Length: 522
Ligand code: FAD
Ligand code: SIN
Image: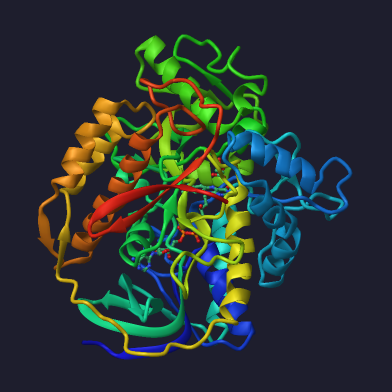
């Protein structure tokens, strides 16, 4: 057994949500420990552990003195993208706090691209009615944000445990009281009055994704096993333009939506527009609409991809250096000025249910960032609202944590030696075939049978833990997708193609190993 660490707050995750919360809580005088798979900042330039690092397009934020924009307009765009399930009361304060949160990030050292007048440059992405997305290093926004946060944390009293994988939330008298983790094969414990899950998404339930390798749904699994509620998990957002590389598995290069914001055009392999007649915003329609149009174009032409025509984008390599590097690393020639693209698993719109302070249904347990379901994203996230949410909710959670009571009573530490776990490739293939963009009852039943029949696996390695988490997280997605007998936002049921009149979120809890459903009332 490793050491027992004591902190006021323990954070799982070193992306935008986790590090923001850690910095704000530490500035308020709390002792904070952060656990992360990999490292908070990989200076070598190799594979990074956070989705935050890989973010390209930017941060959607309303500049207070921009006469073309307002929080009300940003709210309207967010509600339109969310397809009836975005909660306006939860959303407005998140959007309204955006500017202050960005100002704090700039104070920590993040620098955004500016024009000759010294003001932030702004781009446009799908579903936005105005240019409101600020960016850094062209399309290296996430890398700049991650570096600024990790550098600020390194200069703060926050303790970061790299390569430390959280395995279970510890409870005392029904409230969260710490975490168990494994690092270098050794188990350790952090005892803390508050536990924040900020583990990002679960792209690796599918065989190809834009997400980093550690996005294996750990936070969803940790929260479910601790008794917390999750909601809206059926809404997995597929980005319309992931680089197509034949036969490639795992993380793949994203081609930012900002490329279309700067003039890029989607055409099928016959040369016809992919989105003509589909939506008034054309190639800049909300993501679910464009992703389905891309899939339809691929079916129509029989091609495994569509083309993204870069020729209208001036000085592409300078404006989009991250995409350019990713394309070259994949062995493709950027000078062709057209890229083969396909929809790819990108973002978890639902998650662990929280209030506006990041509190989950388990006292002392908080969630923030992509893993959380605040009500902002509804059935489909508006582009570039995620970094914004991570910043704003990281701050809100840190402030709420400061008022938590200390841990009393004995900490319950059940021995976690084995869990049900599917073979990873089999799970990913089944989810890609039957739980992705086109779903039916029969297909979902098939994948549910695989997941529910997962054999018990001894948890000897981090991969075993991740496979068990992928299995539980996928079960929750499939349960939610089976329950939603309609099509809305990112969730399309070929057997129920209509939208129900009443939009409701479904919540799920894990009770004695079974997924139990209810309706979420915001
Ligand atoms: P992450 O940044 O993913 O961090 C998760 C952390 O949790 C990591 O440190 C990970 O190691 C750790 N972790 C996970 N499980 C465990 C465990 N069991 N134990 C310990 N640590 C664990 N959004 C935008 O708003 N704008 C964009 O331009 C944009 N572009 C994107 C481009 C790409 C390619 C991708 C993948 C996403 C993009 N997004 C964008 C989405 C956005 O980047 C993410 O939703 C956001 O960064 C998530 O932040 P987070 O802090 O919640 O999680
Ligand atoms: C992109 O740059 O297209 C990604 C933006 C996002 O996911 O919000």
